[in-house]
Length: 312
Image (cartoon, rainbow, N blue to C red):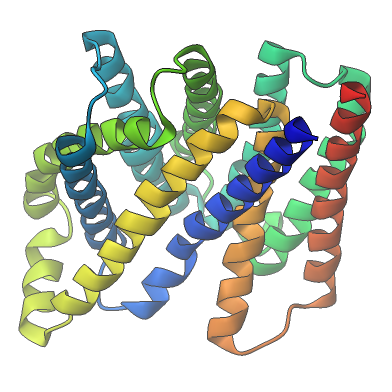
């Protein structure tokens, strides 16, 4: 009974994680005057400052040099470079191609995680993953357009879209393996370590945003209009909620759930994100989107049933 309770607690933690991650979908609508990179730098700055304070105030865990190097790797490939390449891929090849490729993430994480852990027999994993993937495609393509609508696909753009999927798949699987191996490091301490590494990288890269990016024009405009306070507020919400809080819950779930299931649960990020947009737009979901939600949830439910059957 205790193991089952811990399983459902981890399941709930992962669902709340995706609800926090999905805040990133709605924040740009709250601050239309800010560029995507303005919000990104603000988010990771808030995440890093919060992490630095918590490690100083409540720290006690001693991280080795290898731990800090891994945290830096996760900060690069799981946060900053992931987002930068995603934006570049969308600009080079369009959202119509980006949507189905990034939509592979729940499937790739589940496959890579199951290859490492063998938590679910391969012959039983196919149907749940197919349901999750088809459901996710229905939801995303209903909002992002069709494949045929994009005519500017380039090889570089395609590589920029595939790379984030590979990087975040590695991050999810490697992060879970590290936490399951290092039980002496808590979920919150590890989230804070990654946050500190992210802060260092954010501070190092921010001058490039001012010199070569949109920062030279967008940031002075935000100060001139007073929108900088709104950006600071929502960046803090993302930094504390979608980054630090979500990282803690994701780490906690990763230590208790098979990565094959954790990967599939990432689909809830899209479900929550689209739901938030529904609320902002004041409209109900379309029938095809409801079917997509139902298929994705069905796939996750099938995986849970398989895992519970193997634990009896």
